[in-house]
Amino acid sequence: MFLIQLAFWLGWGSLGLALLKYLELPAYLPAETVELGTPGQFSVGSVTFFALYKAWLVRSPEGFYALQAVCPHLGCQPRWQAQGQAFSCPCHGSRFDSEGSLLQGPALRSLARLHIFLSPGGQIGLNLRQTYQAEAGEWQAPGAFLNWPERTS
Ligand code: FES
Image 1: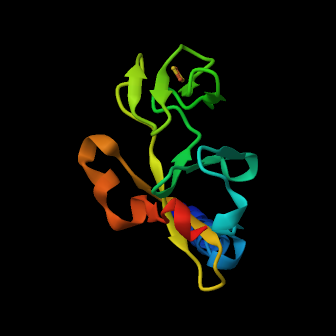
Image 2: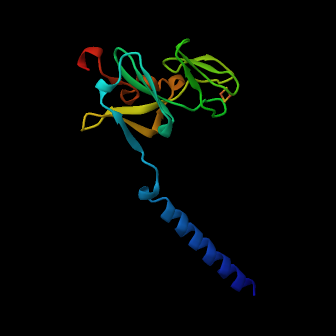
Image 3: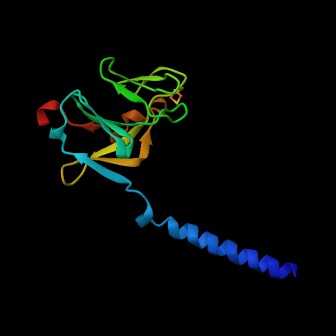
């Protein structure tokens, strides 16, 4: 009897694993990369929020970077405060400057940057699954910033 029960549960377990593998097919995952628009659409100094992607696109005089809209403390969504030129988290008060650097805790690290690139079609693209941490020295990595000096817009 025990062997029959064991075979029964192993069969259901195998079926469950196959189903999980099936659900992880890339066609069923949300888009990994997204396009936000052409560089000329964003004026220098602008901070544009893309709610669908939980990301801000920041246009500096030198180029673009994207910040993940997830507080590194407990995951709330910080808000851009244009007057103070900072992001502040409504949950426990963490603050970050316009580059995403930590100004005030309780968060212990800066906002993560998202991988940014120029697509073959000339659009600013993001990879939503690749992040860069300031504290790990990753903001100097090529994908953490899109060099696009103001005069090229
Ligand atoms: S979740 Fe942002 S400060 Fe706590």
